[in-house]
Image (cartoon, rainbow, N blue to C red; front, side, top):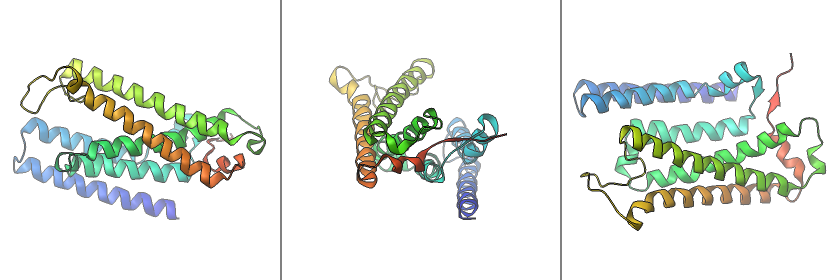
Length: 220
């Protein structure tokens, strides 16, 4: 019941954010193109609330509620607060907060993925370091591929996601042009490390703790 209540609350919050973006579009607070982008991203965020159910139906995989709640929290701070309510523009370091939290979610997902790949193996008989290292590596690789995605968007659409130019369009050179990307990778690594430290403390050297993260196949 708690799961459904959280989902309903998140859906209501998402709809309120969408209403706010529609209001901004109606009064032309931003350009028509920018306003439409905000609305589309908010709609995408609302759809992503149901991603766990979509994964369950398409891939017959059940995500642990612990991972889902963490994922929903990231959805709130990234899409609804960050984009729809423009916190990413108001708070200069909001982007770095996102790059710290997202690898925590991915590290937890890495634990669950490893548990799934182990199939029916007894997790308690393995070393907890196997999960800690796999989760850290999984989050790190995802962080690198995200930077590849930003590079693609910047190359194709000139979105300046990697902040290679100033807000006035002046191109940065040398070390200044690398600072955003390297800062993102640094905070990504920091987030994965923090999640690893948390899991290490919680597990107390017992790998059975990671059973809570295990992705499970829905049996026919």
